Amino acid sequence: MSDDSPERLYFRTAKPSWREILRHRWSAVGDWSLVLRNSTGDYFFLGRRGDPEDTGAYMPVPDEAAAPGLGGGYTDAFRVDATEHVDTRAVGLPTVYGTESVDLWVTWWVHDPVRVVRTRTLHGWQVVRTRLTSALHHLAEAQAAAGSGLGAPEIMQHLGVPQRLEDTGLSYRVFDVRLRETGEELLLGKDESEGVRYSWTTSRRGEYEFCLQALHAGPVSLAALWLLRHPDQVREVLEWAVDHQNLLSPPRSDWQEELAVLLGTLTGQERKEISCLLRDRLSALGRRVPGGAI
Image: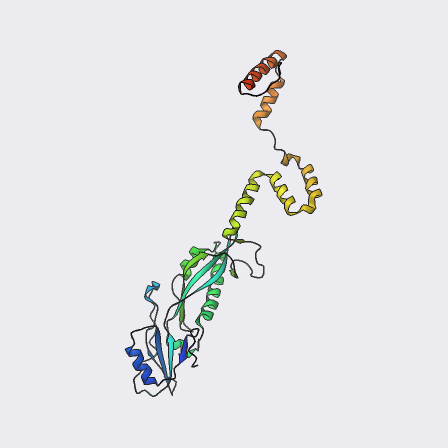
């Protein structure tokens, strides 16, 4: 474990323990903590435990390891990453329009460096991602059981505060939920094996507006849209159109029916007078009308 890889949360130092203790005490940079172990398996610690100051919550960490001394006879010394990390988790949230693709922005950190070394937790994001996925599934199930939906407000309410993973010494919290375009994502609210045909993203909203207009235009527009997507079904569409003339030809409104009935009750003289009035009105509007009475 002497590989100083940035992806690892800790590594064993090759320098004498007393030099590491002095280096940590004299260092003004707080981006690493020092964990030491003696021949009997006891751990000693120099550094900061707990959560970053901007997490909005204070959760004390039990003092399980004493501070080391220069002559402690330590067999191992470990430097543990004490910085705050940021990663994202792609999630698909169910909505009435389909699946809304979002990124959960997650910050995570080591709140107990001794526990990280004890449990040999080398790669923090793998652990945090697994626990976050489990927490999201549990939250989705709880919301469904309560008859409520799961969206960004519910995620921020439950996971926006520090979540302690006591068995590994890690903590995390979700600090933002943002719309995303594409990519692999965790689907919440349904079986991942089912999948979804469409995702509710910015590129799909134009299609939604088009479908909305087609619905407002009525059965004629929908039949034409179906024929456009299924040109091999011309015969079926024509047969449907013949059998559903009442849908394709909208009925006249009540005032049209009443006017037709009224005109049918007029005498010949009354019809002639109305024809003259209509001809004069059309002529005044610039419309071409027959020379004689209508």
